[in-house]
Image 1 (tube, helix red, strand yellow):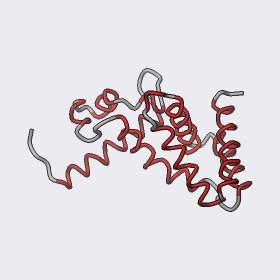
Image 2 (cartoon, one colour):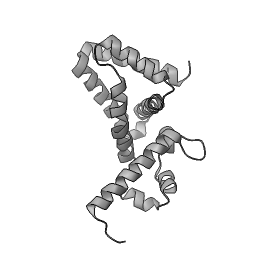
Image 3 (cartoon, rainbow, N blue to C red):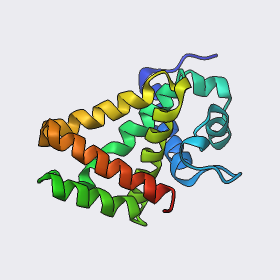
Image 4 (cartoon, one colour):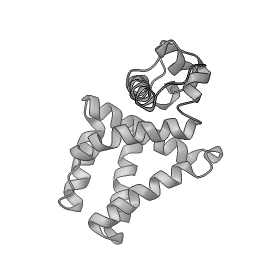
Length: 164
């Protein structure tokens, strides 16, 4: 295999990241979207390259998950209000039901978080994401409010995702 420059590798990684996000948002040709569509095989098919090439950019599923989160979260965070706990909860509830692209991404991110928390095989990945979220809330609103916000937002999210 021919060596590529750091610049070329960076350019390719950006293209692969964009394709990964497209898979996450739009899904694959068999109706999967969100986390389920973000596989090495699907990404290789979308890009028209080999699975081993993809694996040289994303060493494992955790790196894929982290890439999706790193790209998605800044967009999501901009839509949430950190003025006070009530405003945060309101903005969360508004975004989780939004028909916008960011609303769709947000629901899929929350689904991924909840699946990871429930998946014993995830080796703590889900709880790590949940701890990061809690720490962010604690920084903005204090520990008592962080717990309350976490309960309200995730509880509401489960109901929305389950269509209750």
